[in-house]
Image 1 (cartoon, helix red, strand yellow):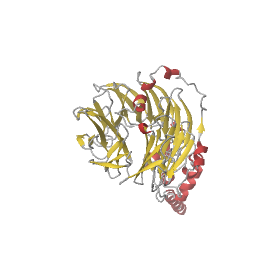
Image 2 (tube, helix red, strand yellow):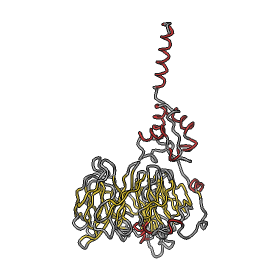
Image 3 (cartoon, helix red, strand yellow):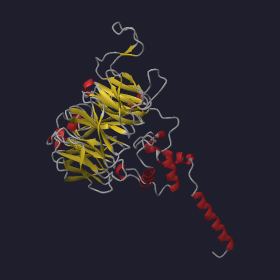
Image 4 (cartoon, one colour):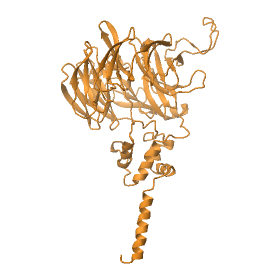
Length: 524
């Protein structure tokens, strides 16, 4: 190009194009991009459709760089296409910002929405009532359910053969802690974007699903298997279903006066009490919801005479019985008889609440943000003790459950999340997965001496956590929590590795017997 004027013109045009391409996309651009490329799969207002909800609450565990990579490269396992050749880097960044921005006004999810969302893959009675295929030859109570977060799948393991017998795709971002029916036939899963799935273990089929909320924390199954309770952050509700996931009622997360609202941070089954216990995130109350149709009525105000029912009452069945608290508690551990609950506030303060008296009866001398929800218990020198990891301190605390005093503080390599044991084992296993330097190491604590007696570090630099015993306490399975991870079987006495199974970021493993029998060595 010999014409100097033309050269200058093309240079100006090239610089203008470069400047235009480098301009950050606006919110309006992001909204238009979402409508054009994402809405058909992820729904209006980002509530989810064929794909998961794209809300900050649902994406809390997805790092921004991973969200960027997902949009750019796609997810072959979920059939999400790659947009790296369609969108510019600035447009992808704008979409990442968009999906991490709250929807305004906040989306709602009504009882009608819940009922309309229900999917029945197999009607009740349409599948055999006996164990089929490979399940028929396995010990039904030594099966494991494994949640694999890397590619959103669930595996079923035969615990005796240490083998995977089935694997199927799950809803996006399942919570750990699936819940089982008392006969071991069904398991219920909760996803972060509100989907509850009922899976028939005997027939290896998902048989029903319902969307209980927009952002869900967990679910609980009643001891008789008849009711399912679901704790929701968005909207702040406790939804209760029958065993076939038909909605029975929704309880708003409001105080008795109705002038304050809360998210429901968790719900638990208190089997001996025939009730659910719910934790509230924003109101200093604890709820107990009886699923006994003969439950005593609940007084809702001043009562002059209980005998003659002089006052305001509501039915005790599926209504919250409220315990006022000094602080918000949202991380619970129950004593073995479920008469008391140990809870932690967001400031790390621990309390003991008696569920019969419905009040605090003791303070816990704990620091470092104890993670009571993963606590375990055992007999130590003739007394029942409980142990808990800490989310901020490199310790395990051991508490006397009679006087609520700290028996021992066991130093570990770093802050941990999970603690597991078994009635037939003298050892408790703890991780340090909250530590940047020790997340690759499991430690073994002797429950008799309260000392660390072993360390297991199979893959330096890779997260190694969450132990689950088989039903007999003979071996444990631990998770190599990486995208190309593994389930590692270890002898429960010698701590030696037995075998491995490949797995995609296995975040949790759950033995049917231990969970259904409420083993003292596992969380409930």
